[in-house]
Amino acid sequence: MTVHSATDTTFDAEVLKNNTLVLVDFWAEWCGPCRAVAPILEELSNDFEGRVKIVKVNIDENPDTPVKHGVRSIPTLMIFKGGQVLETQVGVLPKQALTDWLNRSL
Figure 1 (cartoon, one colour):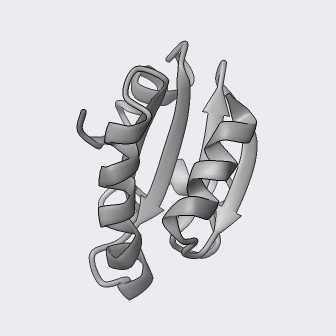
Figure 2: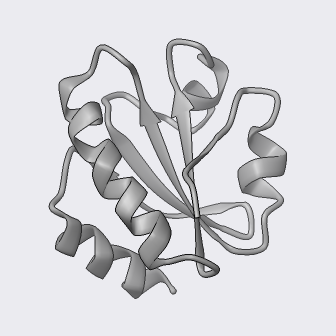
């Protein structure tokens, strides 16, 4: 499985209208912590294949979506289900903490 990308125009289809659990990573290329969490998200995309879709949104290229969802700091991770935000996490967590966080939402 791979990590997907969404834009301001594709966010609804990729995330809000998706029937599975979706983990969204709001990030930017210049953000060191964002780069640190990226390989963890790649691993999680394999670990949770078929159960969780992981989507990245570059806040510099897509400024509207982060504003709509109240993103004020990056990386911000949000878990969506049925078009609604279930949980939000700001900052970098180790893989096990993110795994536990996702498992609680499944």
